[in-house]
Length: 394
Image 1 (cartoon, rainbow, N blue to C red):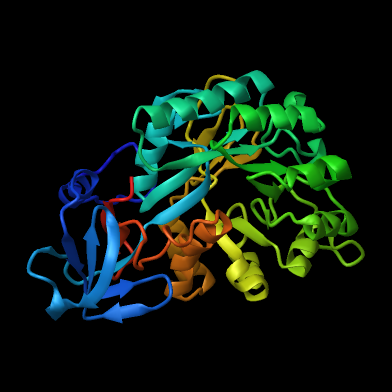
Image 2: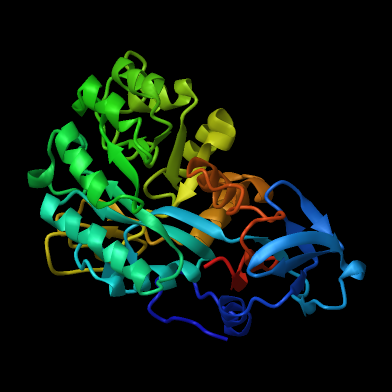
């Protein structure tokens, strides 16, 4: 068994025997667990058949073909591995500060401790030169065979300085088609998400951006309700960390939060009880249903460079005390959702896997257990602790 002592989350065990097996083997393998949650329903008495790192069938546990190696996982719940589309770092490394493949690898390893098999490394508002370096670092990580990385999330620099949060104001700027086009050409296939403030983007630029093969997310925004609704009507599909760094819902001005509720857009949320009160998560879940999903927005303690995060008690803050990032894992988000918010376990699991996969257009291969999906699973015990993570999709 393996435990990385650098993790600030609760102690989580990873069974490296199974983990290593699926990273290296294409052999036909059958996985049996007491319960299997597919992303749609919970099955009992079934086995998942995998071959070449892909799910090929779900059968009765008594009907496993003889050529399959059988792995009996015992009494736990087997579910799709989690997906974190906004994470900044982990295990002592912060990508925005240290633009290296080692930072991405450390973030991947941190995510594994919370059942996260796939992630989008996130870069805070920065200079264009550093963003370009970040793009090349992601490219190098893939070239070197790095695991788990879906791509890059640029949170900024096209945000509203009024709602900058922990972002560095001197790098915030107004977007232009020419500059974004250059970034997307340099980051073709690598940049997956850009968070922008819709009110800071002229209509022509926003309409052009929404036609590009990336996900545009509304965030760090002081938009009025009409401004935000206009962005969603034009096609913005999602918002970044509901409630945090956005105009609030008020009686005379519903703001960005009201527009998210009203528009049917999706939104991520940081479910730690610090960034957002658990009651606000519960209210939002009732209103948004399957449109709300989890991110960690996790950082790591760094005391040098322009982006410094200081860990104290249960959170990260800038040296001036501004809340700057969470100490969550995806599994802790699920557990908080169930135990603190009152979300049904199956739905909390979807919020950590299927829903972010849907946003990214990857829900046929990730965030689910069905024929054709990648063989990426987590095994949880009755206390919602991670027993094993099994990855076969890289």
